[in-house]
Image 1 (tube, rainbow, N blue to C red):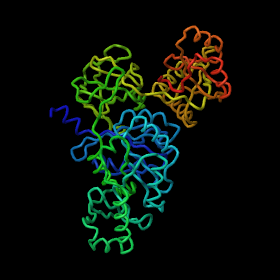
Image 2: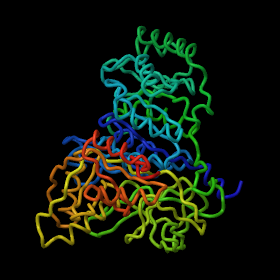
Image 3: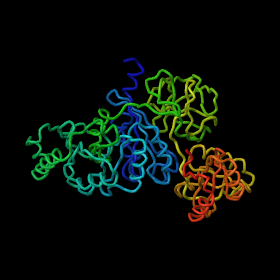
Length: 527
């Protein structure tokens, strides 16, 4: 095994996804705690604990107690290099999450044991399904009185359309919650709840007949556990790792992230069964991670991570070969080489310079505006990595400039924020009106807040009566020109200059589709 293959086999790159408030950021904190990356976990929203969480650092995130941008963290655990992407759960920022899922090899889905499977979880699962991404479920908040564990398993199978295999099982719930039994390694650790520090002194029980079990959890819970385990081993077949890797079976873990119960069990199993970096498709061919030549793609851009320096960082997922700082790589879209002398690895907002990185790693490249989301970088090959779509937005508002002296700053701010993929900008061909399209209303607040704070530009948003923005195409050039001419007032361009038809109502769109059968309408930009 050469050095490259060794490095690849040590890497695990995964995303954490969930409905807002299921405990995703808290779980991220605990994983970092076990990985020794931090030694004290913060609370997402609390005045008592002085440490804010490590992965939510933008001003607006601290005020709201939610994650609005994906953050990337790398840490080592038992000789495995783990790259963890914490995604925003709030559905208004779903698009950032969809894009992030293109950059990971597997996913941990957090489910709240009180609320069960929520709508946003179902949507995210559909995105995982598009790529057959392997999924592990972590059922959280067992320190609260939640629903019956068996009901939760049934609900996951039903709503998320995936088979499950419990690998840990809770002892009690809410006030009686005592710990979890690990079916994978057949042992039991009883913890004392601790919100911040880790307790290593759990009691390890190898055999369920051991009477220390009764002594520690009481006869009722001990008998219940023995019954449960017998039932589970009868009902659910052994975990087939192939089925998990193909996205057909989801291993399930129970725990309470805030009390560090059950997290280590999941992490230990995760590094054993989850996939190392896999091959990926470009438009030309399938690229294997152990090929000599470097390639990767940009899946996220973040401007002004450090308010003191106006910098833009492009997040690149490395897919093959070895990345070396200071080398020149081809940007396939520009067909031009760029030298990247400044590359960083992440620990939320703390960054450190990296000299080399391997498949599965995420590196941040300082960018002056040459890179866009979806760009492919390579050592010369021209194929572009597939699969980073823009979805058609659902809410549209017109941008109204409040200060004519700051028009330049406003335009620059809007362009940069749109390059980051915060929202989509459409400029009408007629009258050059600018319209911002988003998935959820909260994005307008974020845009306004950032334009003011980072670019000194103030604007208002006026609601518009629009139903959908559709990209369109046709094999018949003449018909296409006819269509553009007749619907001139309703045609805009997106930020890449593609033509977009702005439909005012569903019925009207239907009518236009009937009147122009040669024109194809698309609801995502990648067609």
